[in-house]
Length: 251
Image (cartoon, rainbow, N blue to C red; front, side, top):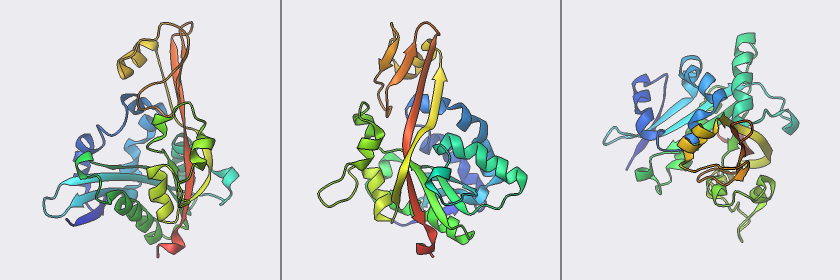
């Protein structure tokens, strides 16, 4: 099969595939991230060239989405924002200030389950890299959400991110896709996605019961959810792994 990437600027009508492609991609609680919900709709309006749809040419079906946002970055690890929740408000603020971006930050990359196993993750990351390079940006940075970390929710992300296979590549498959394309680990962003809700909301999102305060392992979550019965509050702060692609290599 042949696939082609289009930006939202080129094919805005493809955005109607969101529910089919992205809807089932993440645990239910991930869609309750207040920062993402505040800024996400602005991505296609303000940064349409960096919102990517992957289309199967024969059928015309959208099989993947990739979202990213340009921002200005010094190049120092210490100056990276705190993942997705950090870069979204920063990039929109810089846009209003008229500050020229030099870096593209990946926000998510999703492939339909029925289309997985065909190397489309590589294609969709390359599409983001290409978009950044076309606009003269120096780097693509990605707060990578390792796709097998949820199987090890009690393991600190710093330890998990350091695991490697016998061939020296990262243990985690999603990190490995980035590494094979030249992505280098830069560090951990501790609060990349933060979700808060009442206990009733968390019970709805997870199907679990939270009778006492404590740390709970939740299906699909990278780390445990902190529950406070006294404050009727549940909170999770998911860490991600910063990886950097130098876009001079993509030209």
